[in-house]
Length: 71
Image 1 (cartoon, rainbow, N blue to C red):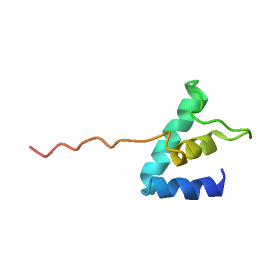
Image 2: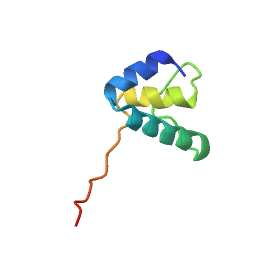
Image 3: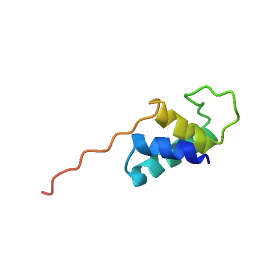
Image 4: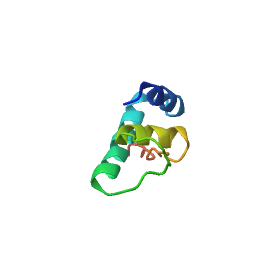
């Protein structure tokens, strides 16, 4: 994992827990579900770095579910 990508991605998704979850989910998609990267790269990147770059470049976003008020 490239430290510079982590630092840049953490500026986009400021909550570290959300960042970890988004990256983990995307890595799973890339490794086990056969999804292709949303970025082009001339260098060979690890799946984690691909996910970070997708976040940095605005190609990967997330949405938090709305919470339901207690009844």
